[in-house]
Image 1 (cartoon, rainbow, N blue to C red):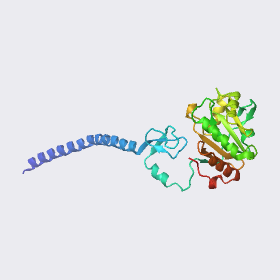
Image 2: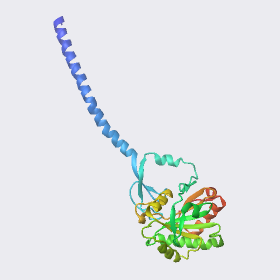
Image 3: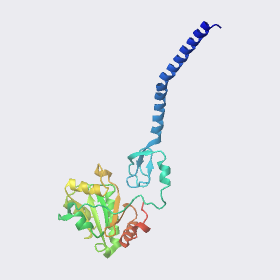
Length: 268
């Protein structure tokens, strides 16, 4: 092969090599673009919709449904990263998901069942052991059983009710629940002096419900929660309000004795 032929061959080889490199460079973005949807799909699979029960946070599902414990509708809470369930399994044993420590309770001005102005914290909670539930007088589902449970607990505590323990029912429908309606509703359950019902202007009631983590978009969606606490010690917990009254009494006793964080397991 003479030098002229060799030079021509080299030029053709260079052209072919340059074309191949150019094609590779052009194809790289396309290949990267193809990888990105796959990566996005993988990331999408890595996060899944999480539904949970407002009353029983341990009840979780990847799709809508109802709680097997209390039949409440599961609510979409957040997007849970894949592996979060495994991380949760590593949480310290004995952790109480429904337990809360000291609460920042607003001193909201409300009306009690006798139409008297009361300051929620100063007059009803400060320095006391209290059990708080959330009701509305036109409710025909969970509210009557919540009232009946408080009535039973009130009877079981006997003379301690009003002396050592106080009961509070907060209306989640203040537009309807006047003091008179609350008093009539409480009379059905033989509410004693230790049991206070409160209502008020909707903005103030909404502020209080939000502070107690009991606000809902609709009154019908409120949970059968009983918030039990000892303001003097700062110990608070949430219990299932439709459980046996004896279990509520046990939690109240633990709160009164300062053993709430030691012996109390959530009633579900």
